[in-house]
Each structure stands twice: as structure tokens, then as C-alpha cells.
Image (cartoon, rainbow, N blue to C red):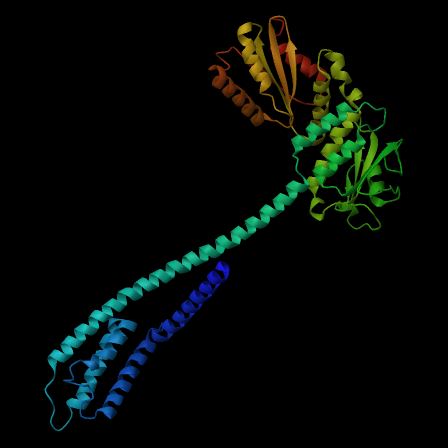
Length: 460
């Protein structure tokens, strides 16, 4: 009942506003220039003619107790301003001359009548001019605010659409690159099966979630011959057609083949959207991912490049023994996780140019530095891989920072130093903490790490 009453009241107010606006336009139209002049003269002439017909002996209604003749110039002054009010007064003066000053017995000119009426009209005209100016100013302001409101409404609508699109994207792809690689690391490390592609099912699920794959499958490749039956499928049964143009292109070039590749743009007869190779660290083709269905907006270079990064990361995990042998032979004390991720990031730097960094914070081996050392260990990020290297007189805490260049390294050091100052009131210099850095490259990774430890002077 309350809602219907409110709606009715709103409708009544809307109708009254509409009617009021229509009546206002009829009573006080926005006439300017010669139209206002013509209306003023016409109204005064018609009024004088009606007066001469109804009261022939006194058209201007002198000595009737009220100056009725000035009523129309007053209204004109309120509508159009003091100038049109003065014009109405001039027409009224001409009417007096016609009706009272041109006869056989002309009457004396009523000075007080015209002087008082003219002042009355000028005051009303001044009032009309002021409020017309204020109304015009208010209309300009309202027009500007209306434009701003319209623009704000459009921006709000676009923001709502953008929010809905972002929400859908986050629901379909709720993980970031760092989160996905962190989960992918667990897949490679936790699967101890003897399969050629260990952890294939878990990997395909992660890739589908990160890259929005709907129907896809992972196939083994042995001796350059891909298997026709899928090792793992997602979204339905998928088979591999060796004669498909995308499959042939992927086998020949060992690169990503998709419908937007310039060489394949005009090809026909493919059933796949993309075919991606799974390459080990030695560029050996060990598997293929065939994608049959995925959202249209996801078939982009960035999303497919992301898939290739995941495939390279997974392939390095599959071939972890070969990828980390050089590091483990040079540094037997290096943790397996650290060596594995260093090898992966070295390969990614070689293939894609993505930078990663190893930073070593060096502490003195005494009890006063134990709390500082533990605070730094607790400050490690989830994606970082750490190595606590011990010496006889010093110890180093090495942090492998994926996808981190000079700026990320500087931010990491500032964050650690701020943490130490907030917790213990000391900085690196006061705590005698030094640091060394190493940019991850594919050039002799074991020797590079050994030289980094040598710069730390752990046995000094």
C-alpha cells in the first residue's frame, strides 16, 4: 500500500511539473528581439482598441480609482524586462495622444499619471531583468550539470559492465601467473610416477583454469610420432589427427600453432583452435596439447603465450633430472627445489627474455644475528625459492625471485630493511648485513651459483 501511494504521489508531482512548465511557457514565453517588440506593440494596440470600443469616452480609464491602463505595461515589463516595459509605456502615451490630445478640445497632459506609471513599470521591469538573468544563469548551470550527470551515468554504466566482465574473468580465471606456477611446482614435485608425462592430469586442470580451456587434451609424443589417443582429456573425448594442418605445423616448427598464425590464416579443414608443443629443456618434443574449444576472447596472443609459459614450466619439471644435473654436480649442497627452479627460470630467460634474480643476504654467525636471520626467513614470499647456505663464520640466505628485475630487487631489499627497522630498530648497515645478487642466465648455472657463494665469503 505504501509503495503504490508513493508511486501515485510521484506521478502527481511529475504531472504538476509538466503542466507547470507548459503554463509557464505559455504565460512567459522565451521571446527575444523583434518578436518581443512585435508582441508588445500588438498587445498594447489591441488593448487600446478594446478600450475605445467598450468605453469610447474614456479608453484609458482615467479617474476610476485604479490606474488600469498601466496593468498591461506592468505585465510586459515582468515578462520581457524594463526595455519592453518602456516600449509599452510609449504605446500607451501614443494612445493618450490619439484619444485625448487630438480632439476638438484636447485635455491637459496627465504628468503625474504617466510619471508614476512609468516608474512603476521600470521597477517591475528591473525586477524582471534581474530574475531573467538569474534564470538564464540557473539554466546554464543546470545544463552543464545535466551534461555532467549524463556523462557520469554513461561512465557508471560502463564501469558496471567492466565490473561484470572482470567478475566473470575472475570466476573463470581466479589465479595469477605466480599462483599458477606455485601450484604447478607442487604438481611436478609431488608426482613420483614413472609415466612419460607425470602429473599430466593435474597440469591440464591448472592450464584449463588459468587459460580458460574448455575442451582440450594432452598427448604423448615419442620419436616425433604423436599418440592419437589422449593421455588426459578435459571437457570431452579428444583425438589427435596427424594430418590436421595445425598438428603438422606444430610438429614441423615445434612452435605454437593456432588459427591466427599468419602462415595458417587461410588454411581450412582444421578441427582445433590451437596446438601447443610440450618441449623439454633439450628442445625435445615430449607431448602436445590440442585445444578444440575455448572462449572467443581467450584466443589471444597473450593468453596463448601464457599457455606456452606453463607448458615450458611443466616440461622442465618432467625433465628435472637433466635440467638440474649440472647444478647438483657443481653444488651438491644446493637444495633440489632451488636447483630445479633455477634451471626452469634460466631456460625461460633464454627463450623469452624474462628476467629473474637471486639475492643473497649475508649474516655473521653469532647469537645476536639469529633473530635478524629468522625475521628475514619469515619474510619470504610464497613464490620465492630459498636456500639457507651455512659457512664456518658466516651464513647466507639466498632467495630466488622469479620474474624479478632490478626494480623488483630494490623493492625486496627496501621491504626487508623496513621490516628489520620496524622489528629491531636497525638497518642493513647497523646490523652488518651485506647482500650479493645474481641475474639468472642459462650460461653455466652451476658455476654462476658457485661464484655467488664465493662472493659471500662464507668460510672467511
